[in-house]
Length: 320
Image (tube, rainbow, N blue to C red):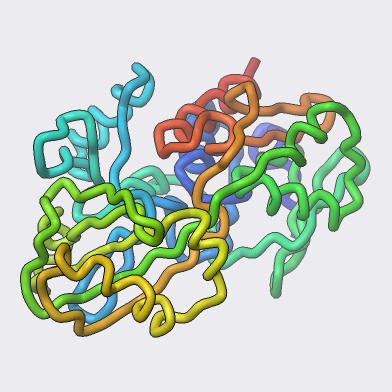
């Protein structure tokens, strides 16, 4: 499938990744009349803004909230709130926001009106005759004039390496130096109400980093408590291959006082690249000669807000 150019001979831009960086960037380009397609390997929108249903329980399994400290993010949040996709975090912190009815509502809103193709796993990116050729699992190849990679940097570099793209300047070395924490997320359905406050709790614990009750957040009314447990980065890396039962045996005894009710179901989500340990010194990267860009939280900062700002910054860079 050759899609290198669309309408009025504009070069097609392909964005790999439908997280908040990719969706905001694609939306900004689309608003300026650019032809853009977003490819996402999973079935959802929003990346770490992820919500999952397990039986009658609903969990925000990735980012639990986001901030709006920069003016560009404050403007976005005001728009999202007006459109019913965002509300304030329940509790005393007025500077935190959550998606409604779950965090994935933000990604779904941003994807509206865009050509987002889910279930498209890009295997390699090759530069040939001034165009990009993307090999996609179980689908025809796609051609594009410009390519934007918003997946975690190691995954993005692997796509270029698979296609034999020779990046060799100092920027490549900076990209190769970027590293990430992993995070294991336990998803607990309880038989009764938890003792976790509505605003969640950060623990000084060797195993557990964060607890949040999704029922008290207002996204899981069908069960007494649906608790997201984020485990500490170093411990997550050490136990990344453990299953739900193994993790429950190791973790649950230390948080019984917060759970305050029997656990009736344990789920698990593994975040291999949950947040960057190190970040690039600029909010994005753009190789104008190659029509190649990078954006994401490893550029704008290790938060949802940083990823959002990065996507918007790259869209601006690409149109200069």
